[in-house]
Length: 232
Image 1 (cartoon, rainbow, N blue to C red):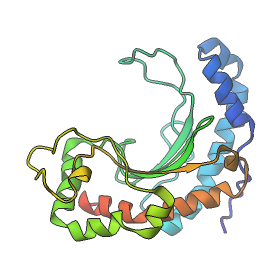
Image 2: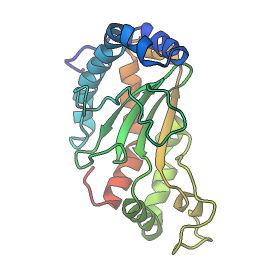
Image 3: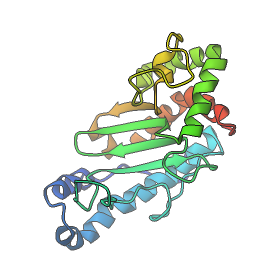
Image 4: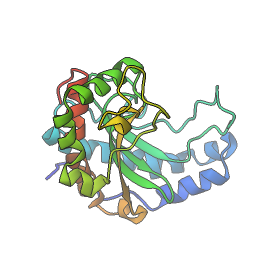
């Protein structure tokens, strides 16, 4: 059992995000910054610390960093430079436990997403750069038997259903359009997503549910990290 106690997220976490979605402006946020710190930053920090101790039992290569800037918790501030949506704040909160060798959210990692009406636990690699994506695709082609064990893993299927990820409309250049796993070769991300009833996050058992999902994602995580030359 983890030495760090996590008793669940406060109910105001989702209420705060719901209020933020209706008041997504700097004036409202600055007036509610103490509420943000109390209802989101503080409990998420506790969750990351508690999850870090459990991650160590899964793999020593994934980092649980409780820092509010540059750590596992995603910033609440949106990058609006190239977006038509100029709302300054994200209307969700999330954290990623990325591989020690990764420096961005595009590295392999485990993920938790909290939002009113949408809570999920995930794992895999999201929108990796093309050289990394090509290594994963090549591994699928060269090791179809290993990939078959991933996509047919009973625990993975039971928890996540199937591997997800945006796809190209056609086979990527240089790959056989008739390949048995062509639908996977078309993917630009390789991600698993386990949907959670939002009320679960208020309970201490949510961290157990998260740990189990991370464990059930191990087959994909091992394959992806092996493909790009990193230890799981």
